[in-house]
Image 1 (tube, rainbow, N blue to C red):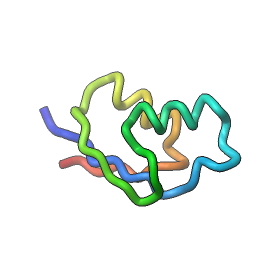
Image 2: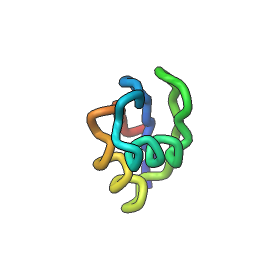
Image 3: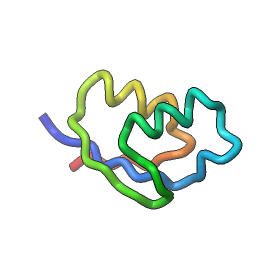
Image 4: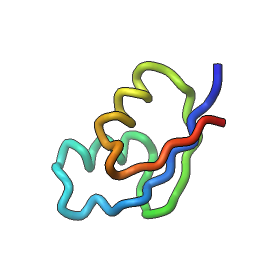
Amino acid sequence: MADLKITLVKSTIGAVPKHKKTVEALGLKKLNKTVVLPDNAATRGMVKQVSHLVKVEEV
């Protein structure tokens, strides 16, 4: 199973509080930071919810 490389490309200032918590749960705290997470249903669902704030690449 592949991994997902997720980068925060837009600030969470002014975002819905639920989206802020989702971004933090993904492990992203600062702009342009990247995390590598397993490609599973939970991660995909979180990424889909905040797709307007992050950039996703398959590794």
